[in-house]
Length: 81
Image (cartoon, rainbow, N blue to C red):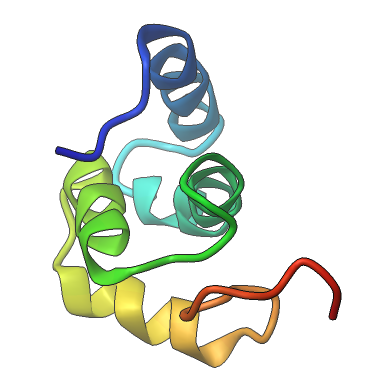
């Protein structure tokens, strides 16, 4: 199962706490960066589902954002671009 370690989860809570109550969805971009950095350099469906669960949002909302921005890799990337 995909999950952050305790230290990473503490950072997730810090990121979410930056945003007002009811606006936690705004933490999506930094959490996607964190997930991509920690789970192999790309975002597969289980990783995006996990991020959605952290924010209590629908997975499709994460897929939409991740597929819109070119800074997120939805497929594995080579060592040299």
